[in-house]
Length: 267
Image (tube, rainbow, N blue to C red):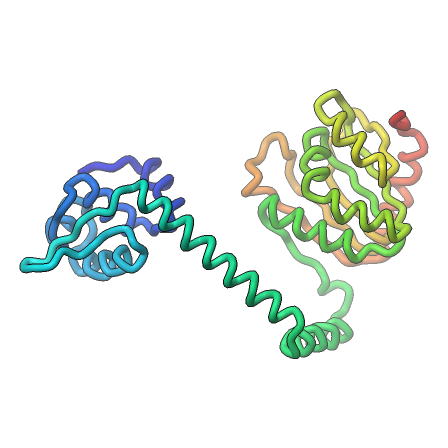
């Protein structure tokens, strides 16, 4: 049985690996089959098929039929969706509960102490790193904004303003309430007008035309800058470089202030 690779990739959203997806779709096409038959149909090595079938059974995708030879029955896809949804919900609830318990535990206090002790012995040039994927970049930006005490500078693209508004608004609001000065520069247009109006409650926003730059400066100490044009790269492949350097950050912030004075104020 030939199954298109794109179709198999979508099936992985059920939480299956490649072999599991092939075996399951093979069984769906037959309804009932032995491990050997499924191995032949799906082109999965027979030595692996038994482990894979056992895994699928535990996940609730198939049922083992009593009798000899041992055969397997496919669970209807609609039922599988309900089972996967239930399992994910239970696992998420369990994980969130464990995180809540960890938050107030002595373990976290010891880990925090260990981290703070380690930070004291690290030189500034070691506090650099790359952040891959747009989701991870925004997670790191949220952390930087959360720790901001004096100033936040954000420079982004027109569409990037919408994304940052959605991803960072909560922490930007909290930073504003702490008295942090927040400056945002981006190309402003009708597509990001709503985001601009929302951000204006907490930040000073100015219009910058024809500048393809994306970076953040926090407290004139930390910098996060993106390496690629967000219009030309897939979000999964976006990369940011984080640098903790007061000398460079302070110099870049001063250059930004010179340009800031020339930018059009958003009314």
